[in-house]
Image (tube, rainbow, N blue to C red; front, side):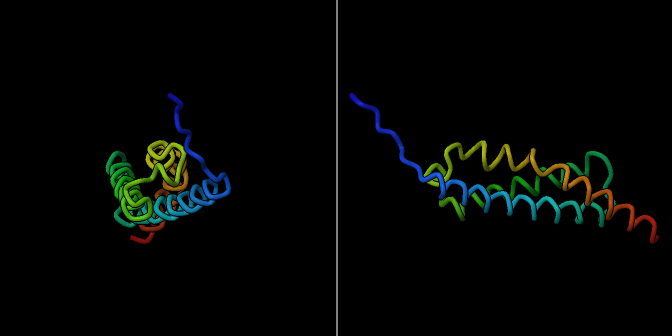
Length: 107
């Protein structure tokens, strides 16, 4: 019995990863602004980030991946959920701190 290998177009995979990264970038920055405006501190800010990015990832998986993300990514769980959560944390923290400082200084 021979195993059937999945054929992927690397150009298409790279395009899908770039689009997903753009969604993660925008989402993390927006969540940073939201946490800063709400003047959240400590774990509450990170809870907003984790919940927001997970909702975004689920929406991406369902809508864009058509619940079959393995057609569009080599490792869909890692690329959509794990990398999306870890890679964009610095951008989130940067905007969270900036907006938080602006809101606190104006009040």
